[in-house]
Image (cartoon, rainbow, N blue to C red; front, side, top):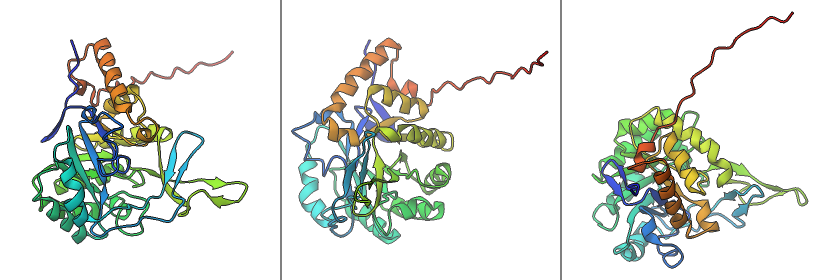
Length: 317
């Protein structure tokens, strides 16, 4: 019997546990000929801001020798008005759900973005990006402060009844504290983690590899740290979690589910293998059959906690 891979995240129901992460899938149209879109339960479009942004200076991407990536794109985008007029209509008939990522410099800008999106029907959920490490204002400055987090989520909650996802940074001193603030303010779903802050230096020139010196570090090397954050948040709130951070295989997806995720986002590895979602789905089915799972959701939070063994002291001689 095939394992049911559908996911239910509150009111958001997905046909697949895999979601294309924001920032790695453009506006959602660029990959339409490279990847089987139906294998994703949803795609998250690149983060949209109130005004157009050119992004940070180049170079702004560096592939690390460890298989990761440092980027400092800086939320380059066309701005909310052009996005609604030109990009959003192209997603109307997509074979997957659309999640729109938004970010502002102030609480009022976040609320304005949600209000502008609300009349349009092409999207199924919003993801509040309060965790980008590559912008000077807004972004991560909201995501490391529980009071600011609660304020921005509460204000955005007033503008929509559709699912509201909050994307968390791993750089907060307490991911659990930020998660609780989101829950108190009316968030529906949490996604985590955004990138860590990293740096790469050319030892010959003694210069940083990217123009902003530091950037967001993503890819397989961050997976153990991302899993720890998911586990921390899973044990702190009742909100469904979309896990992310270095997912490259079906085994990685299983690990994120066991740590507490109900779905996952794939980011950096889409650059390496654009059709990776189809491969992962096939392997997930094999895993589900082998472990006699009727639904993949049976794995959420099913990590088996080790039973501590007593330490026996012995006296030599």
